[in-house]
Image 1 (cartoon, rainbow, N blue to C red):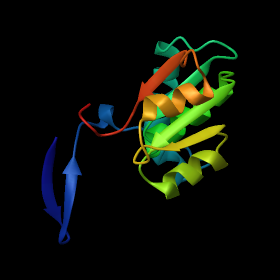
Image 2: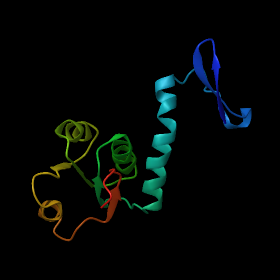
Image 3: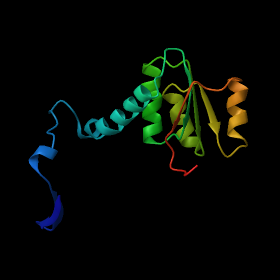
Length: 131
């Protein structure tokens, strides 16, 4: 992969085998979501999510929200999303999250246990924090 200047623009060059032509029926916006959605679907698959499982998603960014969609499609019964942003938590609620927790409002583990005393079946850490 190399960068070059063409007509005053910085252009990335790569082998044709690394490029996938999107069909005309797929918008560029939808095409941009293919890879992040694949990450979310693979996470749900590797998490061995079972129908009626309870899950926690730590992080309501793009991958976290797509994980919510994939988990809901896979049959999760309770979907708990934790994040610091109220805006992202509201978006998670719009996408089918059953419970939202603002991580800045106390102990997240206690908040989850208030919803599911025995804990969740599967947890997905998709935030950018190192812990």
